[in-house]
Length: 566
Image 1 (cartoon, helix red, strand yellow):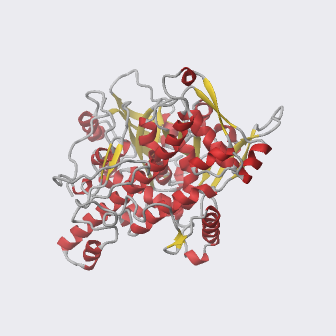
Image 2: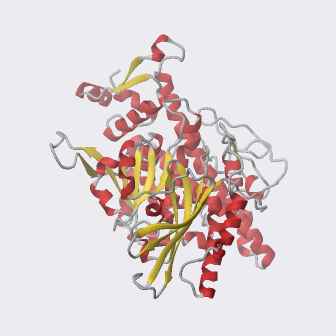
Image 3: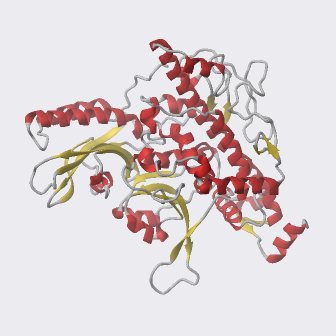
């Protein structure tokens, strides 16, 4: 696999923040491209509460719409007032762009921070001097912004290729996160597509929660970028937020963020979905923020209500689960899997002993029988072709390329890879607006014969081949998941467009369209489900343009849907 050697040049600031025994969190050193750049309060985002309990971490954050990343370290010290440890974060702030990629700096920042700390230890210093910041100055000079990146997003292939460290891309952890969250991950998907406010509550280390934010936002990134609606901006990723961001969270719409401050659990008016990663059960807990009716004259105006995945999500989840089963090997290396271990170790156990997973399986089975999907291969079956877009050996053309059937949401066409300039780009290509899976002779299918050959061989060369196979499988699984989600999104948006007046007509500029429970069946949603109706309202609100869509859910409408009246 050929690694990218292009050094990103998108930085506007590099800084160091630490905890002072009398002043609290402070920024004690920084370099900026302009004196007008304001770094006030950034020290609270890069040193969130609870981080003093761990030795190291990675924190993603935003400051006035600009993305950043920092490396946290806890060092032992006998300095008075420090309580035995010195807490510090070394980070960078990126320039505004259409697709910021702070993760491209993570590996280099770790190495740079280690060098600076080693110099301090050798000199017997607690705080770096000006001369010891010289490596940071050279780093900033090499990577500071030269010109604004105005490139349009050109697809996932290019997006993954732009990462200097392949495994640093958050979206590549999507399969691992689906395995952890299970069918409940589609609750996040719905809120992302509806551009809702999503808050993830976690405990240190926080890197896994920050990665979840980026990976979740990318579930609908292409659809939100290319769909004409109220806005074409994808869901905003805020990263780590603290109490200083509370006013911002209440006023902004359409974001996903994470926090370690437990007081947000008592402020449900700041968000619409809460994902509690600290839940003691086998899965994280999901809570909806609902208004209190009637609103009280004082006190909380919203309350938290636990929610679960909808039965209408079963068909989509089965397709995603089949992709995960095909990509059964670890999506990441052992070191990358350790990233999620502190947060998820308590959730993962033997399947037979996991009562909640048994409950999930029972719900999926019942939902499948209710929807008449039948059984196939020991699981609830799906309508349509047996092979998904992930399969590279099933439903193929003469060139060995899988093509999605007309009406599956993404219309592809056969394509043959001409040159393997990058091994990880050869197994699947994704251009903007069209997905095409490219067949290769190297990977017959996920878990296929060549993968077994790589796992059974030994030696340095075979070990390199096994690593390449793992990377290919990881990329293939991730792109297949993104393709499946995009196909489902495109399908539902196409159904919504069929109810709207034609563009350019008088009624398209201002008008009202009524949707009834029987119409929800066309969206593959449950006509009697209140959660499905609420989700459809979100989608219509965001993607119906100036047309107002009203859901009719009176008792006559519900009875009519139940009895099949038109």
